[in-house]
Image 1 (cartoon, rainbow, N blue to C red):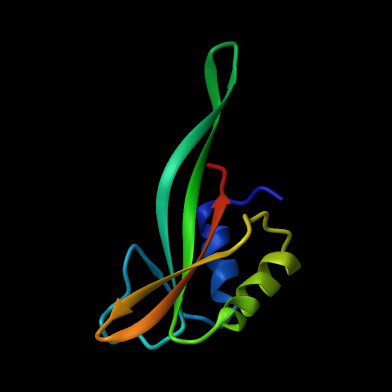
Image 2: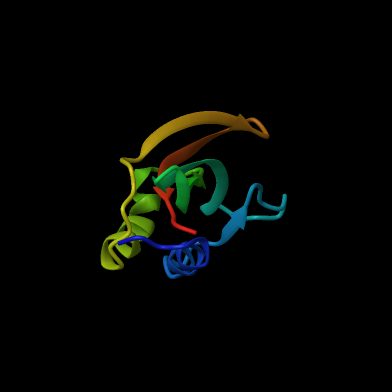
Length: 109
């Protein structure tokens, strides 16, 4: 199912996990979702752009495990959102090891 950015945001919020664009406030509690614009591709007909298809990176930031992104997968699957497989990247934040579970979703404008 093709969705636009507003629909994507609404679906992510249904996961029950707080959603932020680009960065979360320093007071945000784990887990939370941060989404960012990555790039855009175009559908063309006769050398004219008929659709813009922006790509968004969606990250679940958590001090927990991969089970923390299950609510997001559940709502994506319920609403037919096409998403890439999740992958995890650890990083340090305030001397704690934090996991960032990342996927990508292509939207339509």
